[in-house]
Image (cartoon, rainbow, N blue to C red; front, side, top):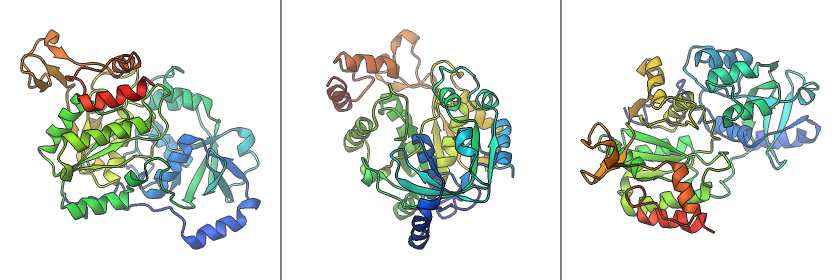
Length: 386
């Protein structure tokens, strides 16, 4: 397989960025159109649809796709897809909108950013969605809370993004699927492993990434910079940590750092499938799935995010999951390891949770070098203790 032949999901890389002529036409009509203001997540979804990250989706899901995704993890045509991509609004917003008409989409700041060709509006069952997608109806779950807080009507249909603006914080790391595929090709990478993260990379992450890099041509380090939980470490801090790590501890020619503009759902196993499909659209052939991928709290079993891949035929997903055990620092062998490679007893293993590390940093303490590279820890401490 090489990036010329790794087909995007569904076989075709979608591009829903309006041409200059279309943008001009949309702008001329804008003032006369009904408008819907997108929240951070819906705006992220609009961008990812437009750049092809959510191929084969060309817009927000119609009811048939929505229902088969929620119940069966498949689009209506049978293609695997695990997370509903919907634009939810209140009944008051939906009521005057006519199916078959155009709707102006504004970003969270109120700027005109896109167009929806409204093909359908429909009610949906929130409890049914959250119990299927998140495996819980607990409103304390951050993904469930978003669904409960959003409107009860979904607006569906094809979308256009007016223009692809540079990311306000990370323009040089904004590498869209068409560009990442080109970069892999130029580097001669036939096999590329994607890594999803919303946290600074610590030694356990580094260990599994480098294990994966032993068997593929390149690593696509693809941190998510869309909306996350309020207690997650801010994206600009995380990006600086990735830069420090790559400058000092990785071979420069075998890693590409790029941002994923998606919002975090915290849907555990289903989001692991979703993250893999998105990375396939970016041109990855392999995807790292670690312990409790995209999980939160105690809602998911430790390796549920790996087991869910067994529910699909490999050729259906078209990307190879690389499943890793929980890594730790082994004091006996004095190296990073997992239970597959270490003879140690539990008391000989050092692993800290992200929560514990955040608490240490807030107290001005550095995580131990067995957990975090000193240069990265120092940067985290500097920022977190301000």
